[in-house]
Each structure stands twice: as C-alpha cells, then as structure tokens.
Length: 364
Image (cartoon, rainbow, N blue to C red; front, side):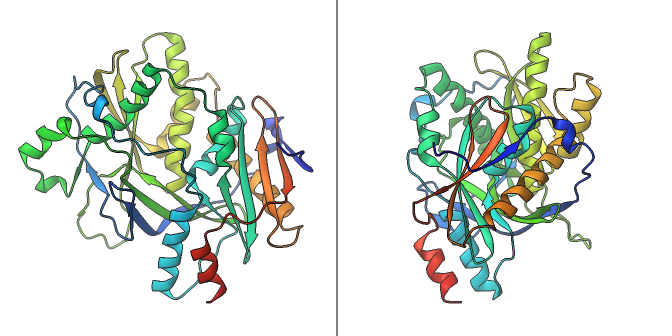
C-alpha cells in the first residue's frame, strides 16, 4: 500500500450532519447485458422479470452444478466503458460527468461512516474532464480469505434465490411449466443485466453502472410521465429471531438501501431463510422507506442522511484533490481495515482505461 499524501477524516460524523446535500435522482441513460458466456450485448436481453418463488424452496439445490464466474479476472471498467462508447456513438454526444465508476465503489463510500471494518483500495485517473474510479483488483483478491465449503454454499444461496425469483419475458406471458421448472435451472452468475445511470451528489455529477437483478414489469402500461422502469434488488438473509439477529439485519439494510438508492432501484425483495438454506418468507420493501425503518427502530445503527452527506463530502474532496494534479495522473484511494481515514496517493503505473475507449475518445 502506498503512503497517502492526502487524508480525509471519516470521524466525527457530526461534521456531515448539517450539509443537506442535494441529490440528483438517478436516470438511466443506457444499459447492456452479459450473456451466459460473459459476452457483452448492447441490449436488455439478460433482464428478467420478478416472479415470487415458492416458500419452502431449498436454496442449496443445484449447488454442485453452479456455473460460477471467474472472479480472478480483472474486468476493470471495460463493460461500462464499452457501453458508454456505444451510447456516445448512437447519441452523437459525449457523456458529461465528474466521476464515472461502478456502483460497488459508490456503495463502499455510502456505508463507510457506519462500517469501517473492511478495507478497500481503488484506482482513479482523470481523463478528458472525468475521474474514472475502479477497484484495485489485486487488493480485493489478496483481502479475500480462503472460503470454507459452507461459505461457498451460503454465497450460492443468494444466486439460487435470484434464479428461482425471476423469469425471462413478461409475467403475463409466463407458462405454468416455466414457473415450476425454475428450481431445476442451472445457476449461472456469468449472465447479468447492467443499468447505467446519471446522478449526482451535491456538485459532483456521476455516471454509475451496476447490475440489476430484475424488473417488476417488462411491459408496463403507457406512462405520460415517462417514469423509469421499476427495478428490483433481490437479497437473502437469515430470518431474524433473536435480538442480535435483528441488529445484524438492520445493519445489512444499510447496504441493501445504498445499492438500490444509487441506481434508482425502487424495490428490495428479501428472501428469509433458515440455517439450512430453506426459504421461509418473503418481504417486499420500498427502497425509499428503508432509512425510515432504521430510524424508527431507535437503535441508531445508521442514518441515511449522514450517509448521503458523507458521500457528497468525500466525492468533493476526491474531485478537488485529483484535479490539483496533471490530467493522466494515476491515484490510489485507500481505506485500511478499521481505520477512520481515507487516503489519496499518486502511483507511477499507467492508465487502466481500455484501449477501445481511449481510441474512441481520442478520435471524436
């Protein structure tokens, strides 16, 4: 880890309490799909519709045939950048943003004021007026502990829940056979639908890309207000029964909310399971209601407004700091596990932006 030359203090949280950040509602500008062989398509072909799964489903079923994406491959921002190139080619205009990144990086910032346990490293570079931020893949791999068999199985439960909760096409067209055969499908997490939105925190304009699990209705009735699609985030969690389990679930809801809030995903569906991975219950939660649920509990585990104001402040700091150096300078954003600071330092490595994106941008 390089020595930070600029440092941002996360605490005390009171420093963010009166900021009242203005947020721009996420608006989808484009999307893309990865198919089951990880090939990218500029269409919504991998978007599925939500259809409630049957309670009592065994989320361990099919684990032995799981087709798992190779997470050791560093995909950088390649899919996001390729989709931006296609969008700019079609629209004839360059996207305008101060920061371009994956949702995962933004989620790390949003949860950080209330969960400093995990460390992270990101790479950042300014190019043609935008700051591009990616995860430092080598740090991510080195930070991962060797999974034990049950941990692999519990990870699979989340993907299995997605598989048995979705179907391609529109709900009105689903056959009874297709609905009942979902439990027999081979689970494959190579396939993804990704939404790309423009949004903003305070004065920082963002383009964020992230995976969307499902849509509520692929063919909604005509809407004169042109409202965005009702996307759905699917999550699994152990059914909370004891007091400490309710506390743990409320902490998890911060991440559920942040991930959905960033892309404008309207609903979160939680599948509650037992210790053996048997689906016991379902809960549909409106994303906008989640901070209020946390507030009404009285536990004061997290606060959505503080999360937004913190994220606005750290983005403004990153933007101001990186803009102080020549364009093309490569930066490392770091947070050590348990630390109450975020550091920014300069690296000597070259750009991580894809050659295809650089060639496109340098010739328009």
